[in-house]
Amino acid sequence: MRQLALRGRNYKKAMQVWIPILVADAVEIYVNEKKLTALAISRIAVKRNFPIKTTFEFLEYAKILPSGTWDRLVDRGFTAAKAKAAVAAQEVST
Image (cartoon, rainbow, N blue to C red; front, side, top):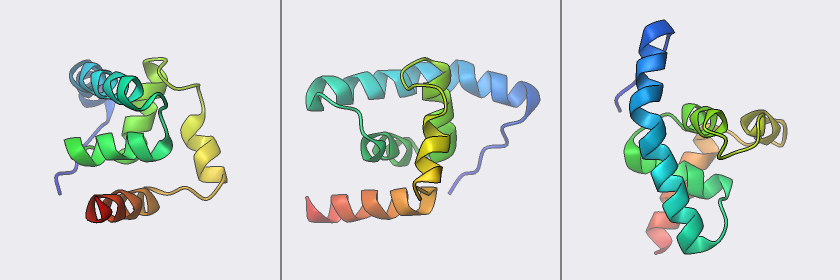
């Protein structure tokens, strides 16, 4: 899997490129499913081959998600590995 080095200018450049793509995907899911869940956001990240935590951070920055969403999910036991497993299980079942 491709890993992104998101530091300094690379982070800002990645934000300029990825935020519009991620926001469009999030809006599409919201319109179709009438809700935006952690699993749905994880599906976006897996589909785009993008880090799950960074996806949440970028959607927080774009004001699609409330600030601190990722931190609250982690406090409840949510991890990127669990999210990837849930997405994979959902794809197998459909």
